[in-house]
Image 1 (cartoon, one colour):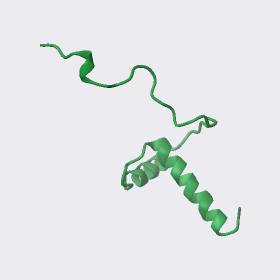
Image 2 (cartoon, helix red, strand yellow; image 1 turned 120 degrees about the horizontal axis):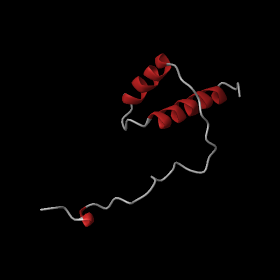
Image 3 (cartoon, helix red, strand yellow; image 1 turned 90 degrees about the vertical axis):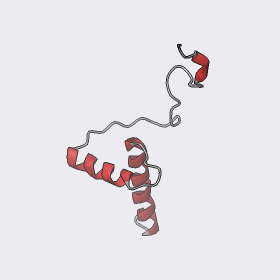
Image 4 (cartoon, helix red, strand yellow; image 1 turned 30 degrees about the vertical axis):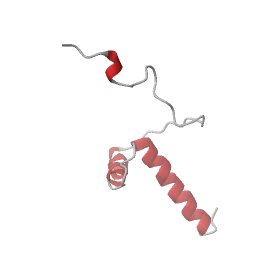
Length: 70
């Protein structure tokens, strides 16, 4: 017996984006990616790699502004 298409509520097409920001591309070395992946796996919600990089940048910028270096 085949499953009906109504069994799942998945929408068709591209996934929802994270917003209307500017896309920035970067090349990363394996060692850096490994550190980022280790950090994100230690987070409660295990963010995607892109979200982990956004969070790490936010942490660094917040740290600088607290030190008055911004």
